[in-house]
Amino acid sequence: MRANQKPNFTNRPPHIVRENGYYFITSRTVESQWFLRPDKYKSILLDVIHEKTTKFNYPLIAYAILNHHYHLIIDAKDAKNLSKFMSELNGASSRKLNDADGVIGRKVWWNYFETFLANEEQFFTHLNYLHQNPIKHSLSKNFDYKFSSYGAWVKKKGKEYLDDSFRKYPIVDFKLVNDIF
Image (tube, rainbow, N blue to C red; front, side, top):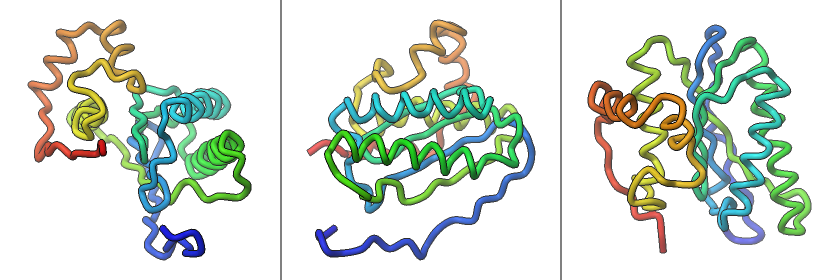
């Protein structure tokens, strides 16, 4: 995006909050710019994610933070506040990322998408997608990616449990994306 060019914000998704429960959330940066590289910016975002999930009592179930987007699975115990949660999460992280760069008023996030996970299949398919996303984007060759909850899931449930979920709920149409220049 050129310095004097404004981002196109006209094509934004509707936000449909169905009920309390698990939500898969994806948020990407304006024009897919790599605002989250180097890793110190991913750490800033992760700190804000922990702060806001605690404030809203939305337990963080899983996450993956990449160079220009992130994925979360949260347990929205009071889903009517989901848009406020996302506004605070993306607003606070924008301010902190801009502070880290010495920039004022830069728009970081384009928008977010949420999907209500209505059953076990949807939950594990999204969990598997989230954990495989750093591999898809060539940020890791395996699941040892630092800014993913995969390691925490292995500690909590065991590698065999996750391997079984990958077999039972495979990711359809998984294509590698060469995101590293």
